[in-house]
Image (cartoon, rainbow, N blue to C red; front, side, top):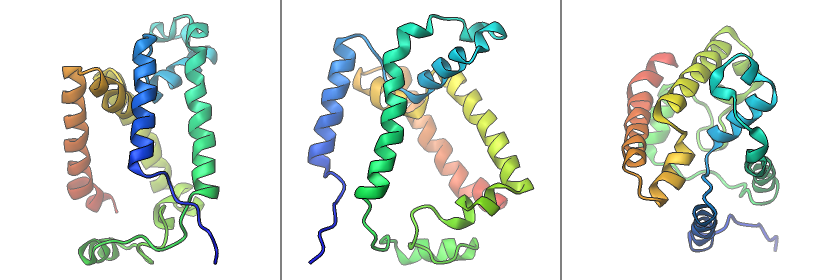
Length: 185
């Protein structure tokens, strides 16, 4: 019998996240991917051109561990914790995705219609990446942080602006997937 590693259950991963958040709050730190991108841009010299990036990035070196952890964690999850069985989707979801042109729905976590190189390196794919990148950058700056920062750090520290931002993220996601996505694809 072959043993397949499973992702950590909620009762292990949830308390681990809570412990990390407690430690970050205790030491006066925050969590969010956008702060890491800001630090990386500053290291790359963006502070010479844009005032926003002028800060002491060395004080944020500890936060770059999050980037390494995300990369390493993604690799470990994909190589060792992925379960190769089909994704259990409702019949309605399968029919909706088939109508949008997706083949083999539920066979891949990342559908090749969106994530294959020939989909990305096309005029449409590059346009969506560039426009989406600008919109994400604008939204992150406008909202004062990213989804992970607001949803994990902000909600953990009971910040009302983070609650409003997270509600906005969900509403935006619903609008995108139900109205804009079908037009684009």
